[in-house]
Length: 140
Figure 1 (cartoon, rainbow, N blue to C red):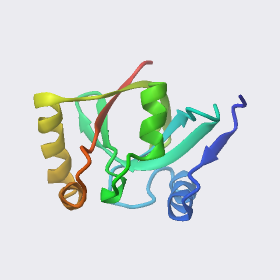
Figure 2: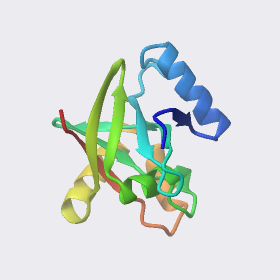
Figure 3: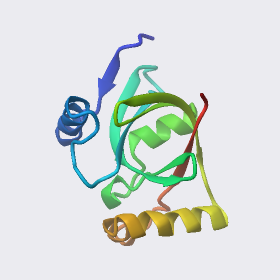
Figure 4: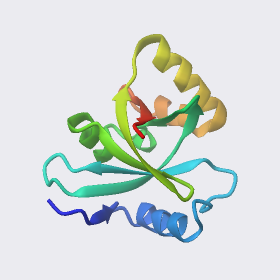
């Protein structure tokens, strides 16, 4: 298992990652994005994607909406298998532990997410899948 990071195979996401890195995290001014690196559950490779986030105190909240598709995104399956992740926010990079939330905590965080980015409610309405909400807590 190497330490080389492999960006998303989705061309749009890969381009977004490139712009994010080139602009120090300002690829989409006005939008809170982060880069999430997980360890591939089958390949063992480091996999990087770009996600919208909201803050909850010192924690970062992301969702596995997959734009309303009927399957969880690969990054989510990876962090379920290994919750140790690396996060880049702006130019800062840190290690974190990710966990899926449930119950009242999930409901509260989902409402905050939709308030910040209303399109996520449309994603929820377009699938029967329970969209996961993930909290990432910095470990350093």
